[in-house]
Image (cartoon, rainbow, N blue to C red):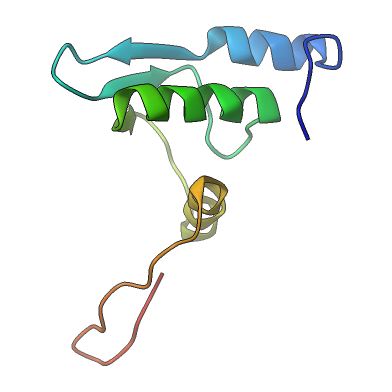
Length: 93
């Protein structure tokens, strides 16, 4: 579902406007500021995706996510791969 500017609430618009993407100046990469990955509107997530496609690597500083919150955000980016089996034989996402 795509959210148009008219459908966004004022709070969502402010959150998207606060989201900053600062290129590293290197061949790839950018730092994303002004976002809480636990609570992303569709518009903010779309802006993050645009930045990811443009810069290939994104750095989100100051995030405090539980394992479940990290998985939830990561799943929005696409299917997750299983990690190789650990010494215990256990595999994790």
